[in-house]
Each structure stands twice: as structure tokens, then as C-alpha cells.
Image (tube, rainbow, N blue to C red; front, side, top):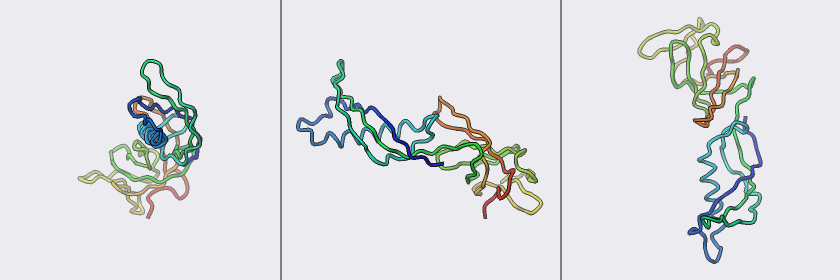
Length: 176
């Protein structure tokens, strides 16, 4: 689900980047904010950081004692993406294994759909392995799947989420 959030952030501008007349200060703050926002990637509470929508305010800069850099507190609104348990989403299969498939859904790369959570589908080995049901519906690489989220897990070291999903429910499975 996409969320619009308001975030406080501290932007540090190196002393050598400061313009004596101050004309480029706002631009430098915005550029630094966008760079740090992109590098942060995600947080456990808010999900993946997708975009900065508007810059709400730039606070008064404070000079840091040892470096001479200036710290500006800023407030901005941004767009994030986070999966929630019970949410129905669509993803693309990127890897088929004997015991299930891995999907990608927007910024989330590690979504696992176990063969146990694919009712009526069975594994068909081969050069391009697939899962198929009695109605000849196929789950293979690059197929779009509609699924329900069973659970998510935040991986702090990688700063990303993993998700476990299922096809158990109405209107779930490969999308035509």
C-alpha cells in the first residue's frame, strides 16, 4: 500500500558547499535531502521510500563545532510503499524452484510463494520449470500473479522486507 507521510529529517551541508551570498543554499539542501532519502531505502515502520512530494519547511541552520558543517532540520512529505498482512497485490515471478516461486512487487524483491500455498498446482520440472494446475493455468517466469500477503519480515542489515504470500482465496493466481 502506498502511504503519504510527513517526515522530519536533518540535512548536513558541508562548509565548502556553502555559497557566500546564500543563493544556492536551498538547492543544496534539496539535492542533499534527495540523495540521503534515496540512500536510506526503507524503514521498518514506514516501508520503502519512493518519492519526496513537497518540502514543507527548512529550519534554522546550526553550525557543527568540529567540522564547520551546517545542520538544517527539514520537514517534507513523501510517498512510501509498505505491504500489510491480508493485503492483495500483484507481482511478477522471477525465479521458479521445486518448493515454490520468488516474486517481485514494486520495490520488494524477496516475496516467496510456497508450493504448499498454491492449491491445485503441481511442479513440472524441465529446462524452464513451471507450476501447473488441472485447468492448464501456468505459473512460470515473468508471469503476473495476484496474491494475498500472509506476513512480512524486516531485515535490518539489508534494509529491506521479505514477504510470504499465498494463492489461497478467491480470484488469486495468474493474471491474464
